[in-house]
Image (cartoon, rainbow over all chains, first blue to last red; front, top):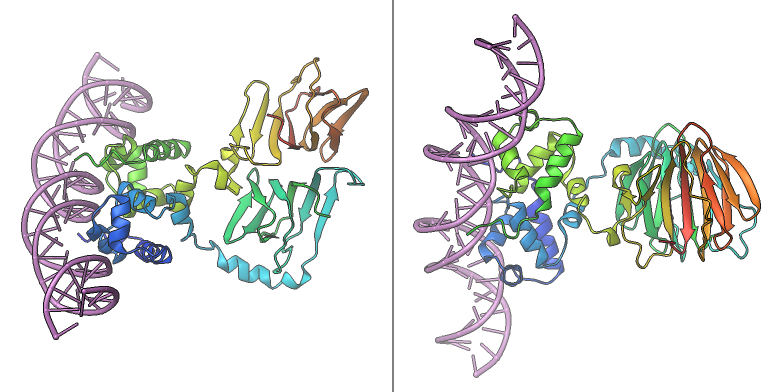
Length: 188
Length: 188
DNA sequence: TAATTATGTCAAATATATTTAACGTTTCCG
DNA sequence: CGGAAACGTTAAATATATTTGACATAATTA
């Protein structure tokens, strides 16, 4: 049998890209990783499907974690949905922020009960402010983009990030999404 | 050589956990994945380090992506997104604190998904710590006492107070109460 | 109880990954 | 211009992953 048929064709390319980004030759990387140089050549050509043990060793030489490595291939799961929803994008609005407390002066934190109507979008122009931000989805689902990471979060799931990294929220579903968020210090 | 020395010892356990979570036998999963049952047994015992091609096949039977699978082991610091079951459970008993992120070092804020069982009580001895605290009730109702003020809060209602003031939480109803809380700086 | 079916494990056979050692090419100094 | 030294690739040898087919045990059914 071949054994390569079910192989992720991107593994090799991603490894090669990563390696070159880090200005490493196959042999250099191999030495750092403590493996033979041939295996890197073969992996990059998709001529072998490395064991996770081997891949982990190799990535440690870069270094990058398995999770981060595979996150690079994370396909924007449902581009089909995006297209459909992006038609409504112009509206942009339809986000209600219900803030805990009327006056934030002197407060260290801002807590909001947010509602994203179907299609709601904080906008392409990604937000940035000097703070930390976290939230828990309590109903529906919300697409959260932070830097180059994007994730569709559902009820019970959560996020926490540095607000200085550009970010964006979108409700791609056709159910209103509710989120409890906290931000420190308050952003507006 | 062994070849297992550099193996992630968690791969097997994670696979076994996932499989059992989804109520699948080794053979059932094997059939769905289109692989032999033995390989699953061996992987779960860490007696073999699967190739990524093989692991991908196996995970497709669950199904879960490679990225998500390896995200389960990702170190907390770099995490942005959390699945519901990944929230870090801090205390059992009739109050459960499920924290967004495992390691708070370097973080300005602590966000929790809390569950108060019927009758749950943080205790007469009122809590005090040097911080600010806020929350939103998302299910059930909760009696919140802050200083000499007491209030029964219901779904959608919220609180915000200075944690230096003694405070206490009790669930007087016979339904579990869920609250999303945020605290800055983290209190434990 | 006895027969049946499902479970997880393992040994031997087979397929594949990985290493070793070589090759042709390019780059960079002498 | 030579000739090291580094590059990426590959064939054959070796180690390991994966399959096949069987075993023992536990749960289920007649």
